[in-house]
Length: 509
Image (cartoon, rainbow, N blue to C red; front, top):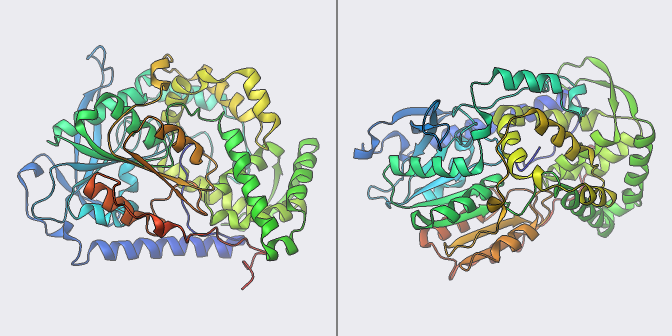
């Protein structure tokens, strides 16, 4: 898991019954959103044809009707010869009969997420934006239907695969050989050029960008090269070019875990039920380092009895994944207690739900192409050792990525791409207070170069805030005005971290 994660917005518990409950809840949510898409308030079914609809076809995105199209670009932009790529995108037309001429482009995270796949879930959150502006979901090269660099190195239905931390070198080499792609051409810089070409193809003189997680790095890179074509930016979970994927996860993950322990110690119910949670976790990690846990567990979907092995590294990775969502991290005390007792049901259920979501939306190959070219070259051995000394997350995660980069063809590192971005484009920066991947310090760093930027820290939230409370309205108002002047952000102040579960039944009433 890199700079994106599924936002479950609820904490699952254990066993096949709960697995069915969570899947049922997701179906109901999908039905509700389809109902919204078909309501009279949503004109995607009946908007009048526009002259710029030419070349676009009606498409159904899980019940959200859109116009879909593609733009053909060179894979190798320097040579402008060889393989061509079809960049796929979906356009949600503005509700207004006289829309603004500057569209909004949504840039997904990862790197590796498909923006088009997220369109159905994002559409209701961007309803205020869509009143006056088209919204474009562009699958970055290497994702979705834009020549995806798909590598399936693990089976999301294999229980033991959820607790493996090593990359399968043989499968990775086989994937490289199978792909119809020059993986050295899949970088943030290439994606910036693609984005601008799609902008021009769709006839927008200017655009507004909403970037989520890694999408914020792409948005900032676009601002570096094409500021004249950029009206405003919203950056959610800010990953400036100075951030190093995987290495900086170590201190940031430790910070998020410490915040969880601090919360439990301050909360009367949690501290009463788990008076030594921080120490219990440290002792459990030490035991797992000395001897991995071998436990029998029932598969949460099939009910089959399995024998699984859990290492300290795998447990640390799973805990970090839970910290992405404030709702999922509610289970943290229960999971720590259960694993300490040799029970893996709760941990396995959560891990498999995350794995299924990631498998459906992520392209591992693009993650490798970007991280190997832009992030791993900036990792120093001494720095990694020092970071690992002060984090529950091990150095092995970074070392595994470095090994993968030796097998994965990638572009040469360009130091210019890691320089701070300086821009006068109006920018709204959003950070979850509890984010383990892109905590507020990174938005603060990006803000130093954005003289028309405003940073809003959303209390009690993890990675990604676009779906939280009043944030969608703030985004709508900011893009409407292309200015933070007069933007009242006080509506986020009342948000709090959800209370921790005291057992599998939930928090104390």
